[in-house]
Length: 251
Ligand code: ZN
Image (cartoon, rainbow, N blue to C red; front, side, top):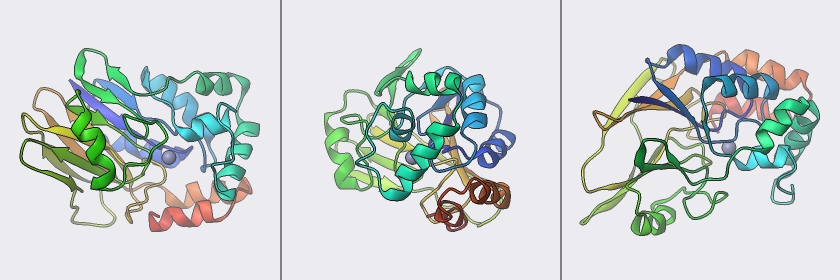
């Protein structure tokens, strides 16, 4: 089975469209949360995400925009975007987002794979460094965890003798590209497909991944998208302008 892994779309319709246009053929879609927040197309992205598949975990921005979570842990820019999003969402989309399940959830038919937004131990925790990853990696009974939240494509592994982090290495800055990662036996992984709609690893292109369960290969992808249109929508919505400008820097 070929599973398309999407995370942190953040209401960026242009990035989602480019991702779907650039993705190789897939059988199933997994969405790791933060469908809305920051971007200017929350209804379109929620509706498209719903049509794509049935496997979701909720993100902190999905919770904040729908009142499941207080805004006190958000910075001013994120809080302003959450309130704007809440006002913008249709009642139907609000209800759907509010009901998204909390991770970890297991992938149907693949009990060795689990899905979370932040960390397996805490849905809101950021797994940025190897230090952050070690505790879940050492205690995990599930060999493969897909996570999001950090907007950083790549991940971490641990086996009997070593543990380290990894990032896909791309050759260009503006073209569609992919980098494969062959999973090794007897090794535990935490893997982040990257953020579709607001990457923060210095690469502006939409990030996603495809997991080939037969070959045990995770293909990391980047694809360019219509950045200017996504930015213009954010300006027109009178969201904080930095939410538009940061997209160009991938930060
Ligand atoms: Zn996010």
